[in-house]
Image 1 (tube, chains in turn green, orange):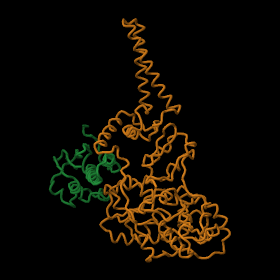
Image 2 (cartoon, helix red, strand yellow; image 1 turned 90 degrees about the horizontal axis):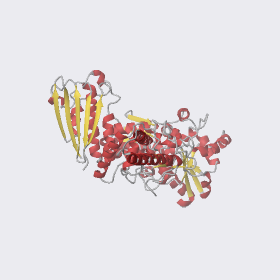
Image 3 (cartoon, rainbow over the protein chains, first blue to last red; image 1 turned 120 degrees about the vertical axis):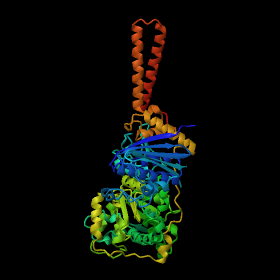
Image 4 (cartoon, chains in turn brown, yellow; image 1 turned 30 degrees about the horizontal axis):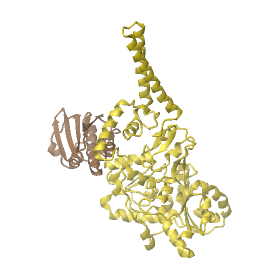
Length: 140
Length: 466
């Protein structure tokens, strides 16, 4: 039995041009693995939303992805301000994104709700002034 | 017919085994093996990029010769709007259409007329399928083939309507049979194509069991035939044109979208850009879009590799030609309505999967990851694969070996020669186990010569067929 495939991606802050690189790499690998289209779609959307969040709100961080034939675990670990009110942040349409980000078409307040919607489980561990760690799981 | 039939081919006599095509192929379908390119028919989408970049003209497109016209009692030409964009100072499409008749065709049916029907049907389809938005255009056969192998999630978003070429063929064939009383076999429907992708479509259509197009000619073959005849018809021609601005615009990127009379569309051209849009679409990066128009060639059909004019010059000519045209001249009728929808569904073909089962694929993906760490990551192409990652994938599929990497081979040789020199030093110092050292030394020298012969085999082109 093979070990889980572990992938690590560095996310640099404020770099919108590179946001999405990690999710697109994972997507390609899942397709090569023969993972069903629906699970690929869920991972792609959830992970891209997470990546964008790290670019907008945090001072960068790291995404670790573990792939096994049963599930995909995505751990998004950032150094950032933390989320003061997780319950509020989970509401559709709630956004604290600055205006310049909104003018780029981001910050619609659907990030966390989408991540939750497209994953089978999501845990948020956040500390004010330290950072946020989000663990998402998509079952295959 | 093979569902992976291709109109883009390789002439291995002309191939020099360089890496231009492997680097530019958008689906990584080409490898150089034994100093010759090989096209993987499952990965290839007939976009024609390799024909464009091959400096030795070793890639070519298959299409029919003009002589095919003699095989039929009655022939109909289907000129696409991209054909009109090839000529200087053309201010009336009728000149081209009449020249086609002088060339020997019995009738013409403009593809742009059929395109106006597709535009109308698309507007209706969009209004009735709001839950499936955005809808992706299916007029470019290479785009349809790309989605089929790479974007299973987007298959439900594809516009399930026949492309204008097919609708033109169906209507033209029916009209010709009615007009002449001839049986279908005696009538030849000739599409004049800007690209090989349409040839592939005609042989193995997606969305339809068979195509009503009988032969596909290349614009570059018809072009010289038309030039002299266009001079002949100059001032004396009949008005047989049946399309307006909407139909003519389909020849360039953005044209199909403009016929939808909506602003919520995106039009991308050039295969690399098309792939980026499809990736983003899969990640749901777009909101409020109704329609996605995608063309594999830069500039749209005017950029096809069987055309003669620079695509951007052609686009300008097309714009000028449309200026005084009515918006549309062909409108939906009962007969057309019936031939527009797809009759078969497009199935996902998971050709990029690494193994036959999920477990095998997972295990191979793991191997690819491990191999990638060992390979130099230079993507030099010397092994014949476009990237180190592609080589790793070939290795786990059993189509290549680790020693195909010249850098790995070089490092092996370095290590061995270092060992040899250490052993030689030992011998010179009068090492006690002189005989044993000599034996090991001989063994190393043998290994060096084995590795060298491996390199020579790669050079001399006598590597056994994999």
